[in-house]
Length: 460
Image 1 (cartoon, rainbow, N blue to C red):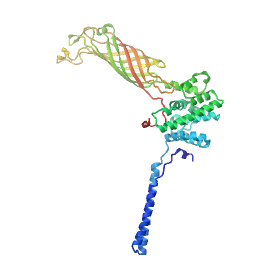
Image 2: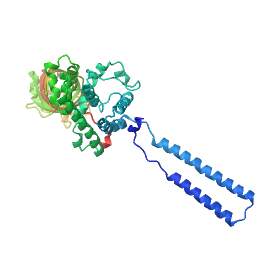
Image 3: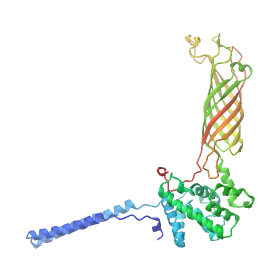
Image 4: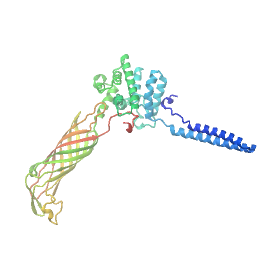
């Protein structure tokens, strides 16, 4: 019976019935008109009446088919979005009317079909505290065909520990001020806004009147006045040994992990040493693209070094010397890093890479390339490039407790030592190099926002 609360009534279409009645009236009028105008024999009259009766039965049959089609086309299986939306509309009213059995039936329907959802979890927790049945657990009623690989084997306390922060508490923190968020449609703002205000009042009243444990007090304070500051109290010693504090530490660790695709722009200075210093320092620009796990980052790096050398150097091509100041270089490598320390926005990494460095010693309009035997690669020099160094990253945004900011954008400073070996029969180019670089980039990783379940992209 309670399922009727969860379904919005759809007005029936009486138009077909009206048409049927009208046809019937017209049929009767037609029969009377025909009977009065012509002198039919009894047999003819019976035939006419039988024909009209068959026509009426055909119309009635069509009407039944029309009703069957209408039923199929308008009735559907309720989704979690439907049930969630209707639940937030019903719970406050049913609670004020003291209809406990109906409330329990609705909650049981929700949990049995979709599991414990973010919409009902706050109400269930507050109600358990009020009834003195809260024991840091939530009943795990995940249906057999609903993501069993993750939840099926969890105990009630394990289910509570895994989900209490994400999504339950964080969903509440992300949406408690829904009435003021214009990105949602008005009916969503009103329905969920009224529901959350109901929960806030319910929690505040219970916090004021009852005697509770430290965990219950914190949860009631949070539901009454949701804020990150209340959740940060879980760092205090009074919560030691509680599942809520353990879940808090796990959440805090996960929410600050950085992972995903990395894309960045890079620039800096290449500074050769030893005999290679004859080429002088050269600025470079380029980009990095790659990815990152928890602490390990791997990127493909490509940058270009430019500007002429400060002094002449000599190269030999086909046994002939050429004096030049031209320089255009490139670096392509797989660069890796490992995070050795991170605190909030600040991170220090150990860096390494393996790849190739090279440069062109002559421009394309050099007289050498007028020689028909000249090869375009003759004036290019290449070397394997092994490098290592240290890096510092400053994250432009930092995860708050609610997950509303992401550790995505960053500025990085890197210093690396490059082992290189350029072979030249002219000026000695033996030597290694240092690079000093700056990277502006960002990681794309899963957002920790918890939007209302009834919203689709078109409504946000």
